[in-house]
Each structure stands twice: as C-alpha cells, then as structure tokens.
Length: 351
Image 1 (cartoon, rainbow, N blue to C red):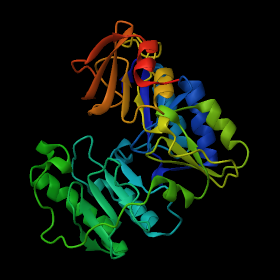
Image 2: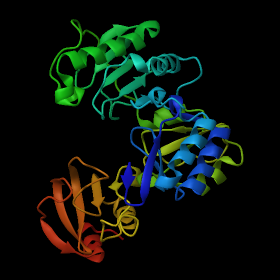
Image 3: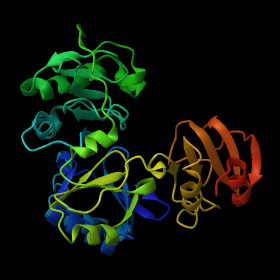
C-alpha cells in the first residue's frame, strides 16, 4: 500500500522464519529497491518501506526468487498466521502451522484484519497478540481450538487442528462474522461444545528464553536493513520475527536484548520528517518518555496510525506542538494543549 515515504510492501515469511540466505536477500532488496527502513509489525510480519511504484515489480521478483513470495499471487499468505517464536522443527506448532499454510486456499473470504495464532507450546505466549482463531495448550495439557474473546475452547489433536481452524473460519463467515469484522465482536458460538480452559500464559521473557537464539529488539517496530545485515553477518543461521517488536537470531551467540525494554511497549509512528502529515518528531520523544509513562502513544497527527485503539496516555502532534490526553485515541480532545517537548518531560518527571 502507499505510505508517506512510498509503497509499503508487507512480507510474511512461512512460520515467521527467514533463513540466513533469505534474510540477506531481503535486506539487500530493502536497500536497493526501498529506502532501507524495515518495519517489524505486531502481527509478526516485515514491511519494506519507501518502494517506488516503478520498482515494485522488480522487488516482487527478488522476493519470489528467494522464496518469500509466490509468482501465483493467490498462493501468498494474505491471512496472518502467527506462531509462537520458540517453536522447534517437528513440534505441534510447526506441524499445525505448516499444514494450515498449505491449505490457505480452503479458507473462505475473510475480513482484512482476521488472523490465526498457532500457539501450541507448553503454555500460550500469544494471548495478547491479535488473532481470531487460536490453537493453544489447555490447563490440562491438551490442545484446544479457541475463538478469540471466548474463555474456553474445544479439545483437538495435532492431526486435525488445521482442519478445525478452517471449519471455524467457515462457520465465522456463515454466521455473519464478516459483518462483525473480528471474532471478538462476533457473539456467536462456532462449536457446539467448549469444555477446556486455556493454560495460564507464559511471559514473553520465558518464551524467548526457550527460543533457538537471542532476542534482538526493534524499538517502535523499526530496524534498518543495513543493521540487520550486520547482525546476521557473523553467526545467525536464520531470523525469526516475533509480534513483540523484535527478532530471534536463530543460532547466534550475540547477547540478548531485554524483552521488557519499555520502548517495546510504547507506540510511536515515524513522525516528521519521515511522514509529510506529521509536524512533530515522535520517536525520540517516545523513547525518552517510555520508562516513565506506561501505555504511551505518541502520534505525529490525529490519524493515530501506530495505534488506532485507545492508549492510557496519548500525545498528538498538531502544528509543531503536542496535545495530551488520557485513556483516549490520537486526536481526542486534549486535557493539555499546545505542549512543547520540555513541558511534556517536566509534566511526567522524565530526565
């Protein structure tokens, strides 16, 4: 889609993983056919930014050549499939996600935001990630299918989990789910019987401790292609994308970043000068405030692209200054209007 800095091209690697060779090709494509900026989304996808319309076809050919896109566009995974980042070859998550990916053509036409979470590790880790149909571990240790927004799920086994997800999607559409848009807003049972409750979710830190490599943070969901090339140049054999604004460097001996870094919990759009609709710089301000302000959203304008939903604290740029609101979306009527950064730092005691 078109953004302020050119076309934005979203790439969802199978099982959220790029081999070393794919990662190198991906980064070089972002440098030569984009502007070198890469987004890491909260639905575990990559986005190459700043692609000129004239270069889009060449970029797609590069992605097809390295196995990150299909020549047949209908085979591309337009439906988000999240997988727990600590999956291992041949485990339940890998088997189920692989089968579902192979059967995407069997899905009905779904609303644009609808997605799946394959979270079949020892306990759920994707409970806070955006997904409508889930496979996860119940408190009893059994696998369950669970519709988002429901407390309980339905027992399933590894062999028929993908089939169950496809059936859930068809029942969602048949029962009017397209009008609701998302499963959590669709108050219709998709299964006759729901008896298993999900297990308590593990923390991100615990899940990443079991991942096959260190966590590398991408504050505000941004990493530079040149930086990623340098990171994988030494010893990483693959790169996994997480929904937590960071990557797992599979096989690398590099030190791990802290997944509880407060910058990873704050939302901030690119701001000025990257976005022509913004009159303020956003991310430097957000990085300085994040340790002091939980639930922070800094938006360059009233559109609120980085976080369409409500935030505990929202700063909205307007004509070079910021408006401050609480428990609100970007552009909401402010409690304090026309603030300069120094005034904001003083208000929150940020040093």
